Length: 246
Length: 243
Image (cartoon, rainbow over all chains, first blue to last red):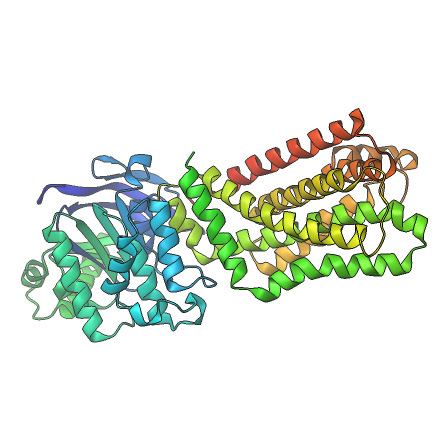
């Protein structure tokens, strides 16, 4: 994926879950070869949007195109690395066995297992059952699985929650390294502080797009000094507009 | 079809079992315990008549429960969503499950059959090989049905209830407890379409006569067909896209 082109196109996307509109007519584009942060409070639709991109979410209306193909297309499955929000690894396998299984499923060489183990720093616990690990350790193993292949697109749902600050910094460096090599990285977070690590931001609230742009651009557009303030002002603006219409 | 993914999945499921020695112990020990109880309980002619059928029922029941719970766990833990976002086809995964649990059924049926035919002195006219063959097919059928019904359970509590809900009626109507010929017509029709009926019939015939008659082969064919059908239905319930 060439740097600068659009890797993900979302067009009029609507998802209804349990009678409520989880995504409410979303339009956006995600730049290829960049780290894009998907930010918003819990329940804003981040996970639903990511599942649409990966192709595991039933969509009510609209369309999503990924790397030029409809989301969920078979040809895409080997090109996307996906980290689910709750760690999805086998509790009754060891860390290494988990990684080995997913590596075989993906058909990548065994050396990848060791590389992933080093990347997410689980070497010391590689022989322990995933079910016996702490939540943060399990999250790292799950991230290790997402990094096993050679994806063109990485979709990571809250990959840094609850992690050690040093590891968190290393991971952000890794995301940028991958983006530099042409990988499109879509990372969600509910912590505004993480937004500064991203090249581009997508701000979501109540299933609707609040703003997109670079962190600096979004701050400047509303004259805020911090992203947290920018987010608040954007919400206030939206409510003011909504109020004048109704 | 990907042999690599199927094989990797089979190895993974067996590795999970290996990490759970208590389940393995129960899996292999319980049929032996039940056979011993049956042996002590029944006079020799009755043990010869029902022992074979019991050898066929244990793999069916145990494999049903284990597969229903294992598949439900895969759905709930998010690992299934992760796998289906990757290259595997559903059938690659299902066949991996079938190989792993089929191997477990083989070991289980072998140990229980050895105990019954050896130390407990079970006398079956058809001999050990047909007995074992039917028992393994029964185990595979239990696995395939367990996989299918797991789609209808949202929690482990519900999955556990499927044992009495799906297995016991089949056992009651299989002709094991009372002759199927004299039952109310509509129940007879129900029993005609339940696969366990043919499993019990095959076991009874293998126990009673030395030759594999055409009826036994018909039973085995129906059992194999039911396995394939349940696996395909199971594949249809593994949804790539969920709400």
